[in-house]
Length: 367
Image: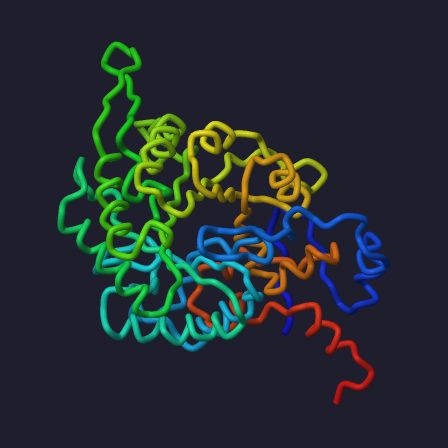
């Protein structure tokens, strides 16, 4: 299990043996004086979590024909811990042309059967599993979400529960479902103008339909309030995100997941801005923050109350045992950005080693 070249950003080094863990930052030498905030338990509606480290939804492009594969089950099982929370990669609610190839769906019997094996592998590890559902053709959507799409989301949520998932997360980030309703442009005289549509209501129709179908206590919603999608129009995502945070309270959903406005890296660590505080105050349910968080910044966010849970993407991708590494303050595997979206079902997918596997490679008793 060779590790892949590091591409950027987070302060990571390669772990080889348990001796390295002890020598790195004193992580394995003594017990921490106090428990990390990320490792404290949390009651997520009807679900009890043993820690606050969430596997973020990450597109992996390893589902040819839109059907999860046996390696998909291996991938998620590797990252499962007892009473930990995983959110799946986005699954299509209907046939669509995606900007990412080989992404799974959850609208055919074959796809549902494929997911059942994945969910079973996760549950056998004692973890909770939510399915992120989406419609990927954001650029072709009309100004209001039609009733057909609302029904597609409802059926997809029903299918997810049938496959054994504990709940669903509706993908509203990166311009999916919402993201074009508060647009700022300039007229012929160079004066900034504003056009406001009502796509928030379309997203709310979907949220309400899904909540009615499977129960609001099994529904999450994801949004990225600092993204832009159209070159000549700057969507005021911050304003939209605040409006959505207030609106989704009406649905009594389980959680909202907001993607952080990433700050610069200084001395290898992400300097997270407190840009989610307004959304945190507006939303009344469980608040999940994501977007380049490190162990240190994640602990700080939980301690200060800026978030209830932290979702990790790239770090969880290359460190299947991320909660354990955080507990030990152990060095992290390096990730290879070049293999994020390839079709290889092993390299850059299920070949990242755990601490135990690395130690076995160095064991003198290895056969």
